[in-house]
Image (cartoon, rainbow, N blue to C red; front, side, top):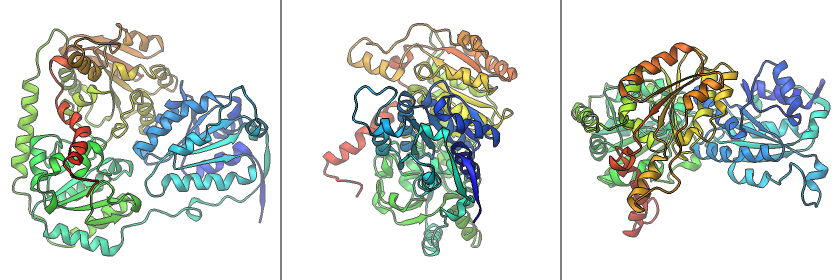
Length: 577
């Protein structure tokens, strides 16, 4: 066997390259100097965020557009600590990210001391939230630790992994054996077993009213095309979860809004539900409460899920198609194409018409206020944002306004639907723009509360010439909290902000900024921003009173997520069964 003399960073980057890593998200620091040196030498892009949490969010955004795992790194102590909240988000959203945290040298780590500079024992905290956490103190363990990190990140339910490395490794080199390709140290994605596949196809063939439900796993496995083909073959209603929004474009005549009355009627009528890439989360009422409670005992569930350990947790499953989502969808399509064509659900057009009528009623009921209503902002923004744009959403009530009034026309939509992490949006948009390239628009729809967390990473987008467009709902408040305070207390307590000229901030950092306060100016402002070919903020001054004077559409549904499960338990129902 031939051995190669390589430095720590050189070997680490060689491992990353063969796993398809294209970008290292990390600030420059002495603790990662050899990693960054060899990333540059071996053709990887290095993007330095202004905050380490954004590094993880950027890696998540890149993964959303490519399905490829990227790397985020933090410097010792505070840098590591800043990675942790975003690691929690990646874990809750089931997004694989390789997170590296530099640590003070082994002698400091193992000493019994107080007041160690730039040091905290953070490995246990990462081990608590990540799928895998390891300490790397010697080069002889580098390959096996990295291999295990990718194995864990991509096996079963995807998720983040953490490697804490001794910063002194940057000064070391060693003899390494020849590289082992990924196919030899981790299993490739597997299709579903043929017996389960046959059961699922037979169940769909005999279904009276099938229903297709698409979750975030469809997008993250880059299976939107296969899902659309399956929907067209089944000719049935299609619903998308909050995280799966856009997996099946809302312009498709088979799409129904889950929270709508028509969506509820389609669920109640369904005797077989095919759920793809969704854990049936609380925001979907676990697939058994509220909308699903009608006819639930007679409704059979086919679940497409890559992780056998996730089957049956939130709701009993009748057929589990355990396998890599894109492979399973191909299997289903092949099996369904082999038989007779499906007949269109006789109620589909009725439900679709009713859903569109409900949408139109929502639009017609929007009030005219002194300032722009957030709902009107979404309608006007939709006129200018290109249909093929990648859409990223961040914020509380801003999310609900876009859900109701901003139609998803492309198949790429990014939102932290499970954890709802405010402040993740700019990082997600930057990562998505890096993956999409400069020619495909990436639009972040966010609120002023959310954008405030990591606003300085707008400068990161400027530095890397990433033309993200930010459409900002600026009502100078945390809208959801504002509504609750006004209803419960009668006045707000620390949920409003002073006026901030975000457009001027964009200009000050080298981007483009424009502020508008009239609805008719929103679409032209976005169109102008798109021509700039640089990062832009379109700041829309919206009505602060709208959050509590005119409740956002489906806000009752939002509250019902938390209440439905406890209500069922109080009535004597225990667990998912």
